[in-house]
Length: 380
Image (cartoon, rainbow, N blue to C red):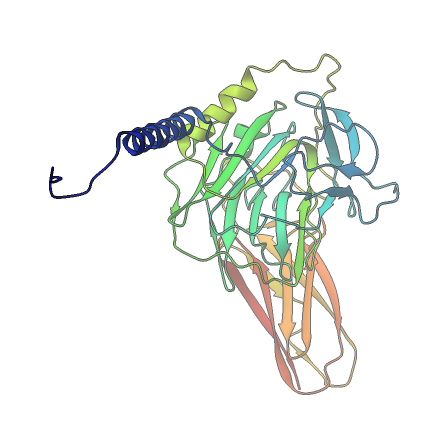
């Protein structure tokens, strides 16, 4: 009997084909089921320093990317190292404004993101002073980091990011809002469109609009906790705990969830009082209503003209109205000369120049977010 046209299959071959088809279908179903129930990869920071060691010279990166911190300038114990204290949860570090008192992190992975979030728990009773750094990522001269979480020009708290020529500042909190002797979670973020600041999960203002590309090509490449050291020293005075850097900008909801999760955890029973009082060399206290250091500075020099080939001592005085401004950052720049110094309690700083040729040297003072052009000194 002739067979029908088309592919001919024997009963045995047909059974084998159906069995294979059922097995393939079962495998596909199982794969889809596994995909459905498998947990998503856990999102988290690129570096997390819980600071729970409580002793020693190392602050471990508990997220596992080996961005390990070392107390001070060397792995050896030094008198100026920050002190271990009972923290917000377990242990924390106390900084009292010493020049070499900070945590050094040599970046290994993830600390150079284009979009980012920086978080830190901080505590102090009273402002730490102007431009005191909680976190600084690298730096250039006495100017700026790639990103920084610091007290800003008013002694409160702010966050900024920078490119090769400028930096953009988030909204700034007043000193009394954050430095009240309680632990507060400070969050700075940049999503490519806005630089934002959050206090305990609540956004401050609406952020600062910008689309800059964060630069990581500065001469200083280390991340510091508790200071800034590129051309000048801007150490923090107070307590710092649980610092983290994220490789993305957390959303307001995510930041609020982080804060609420932390708030449910119990505080340590062996807590110590916060740091209080004026930090070393802070000068007059910062008062509510003080004008920001932007265009209202008076910058005077002891002489405007010096001779080439001769040593000249120049005194720069910085004032705000009749009040001297202590700890202002004075830049002295010209051909072959880049000097940055902090003013003393009398608002003064002294530099010595010996110009080799005729030139003009520019004296400027770091304001926020601009530079205040002061005056010039001419070598003849």
